[in-house]
Image (cartoon, rainbow, N blue to C red):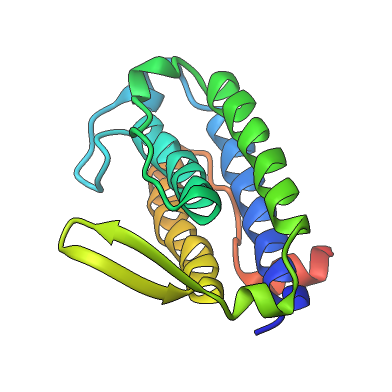
Length: 162
């Protein structure tokens, strides 16, 4: 895996996140907060978790330290989530611009709930995108149930749009 490959994956990640956020902006406040069984409690909870995971991993990449989890109640609407996520996206790309192919092969050491871990950096970066795919699918299911499908989020559709 090289820098160009990871760049493409994160461009896809941003594209897919934008499609989810654009669609989520169409739901009512009640739908955004409505409880569900898909995880993270609500659509808002899932969106904040997606944003928070990207933030958490970026800080871990840069500092080797964990940060406190974001609280969904701190983000009353999609506009607030989007604003914070936009800041995080800028911070991620600033971090990423400093990396080269050799950095991607470096080892990230961090503390996990089950003890210390060591991972190749590009594996962790790929995980962030893959994690997003899982939770965007959950969001897409909720949004479709609310009558607002985000459409096809496949990587191949992104490539066509690109």
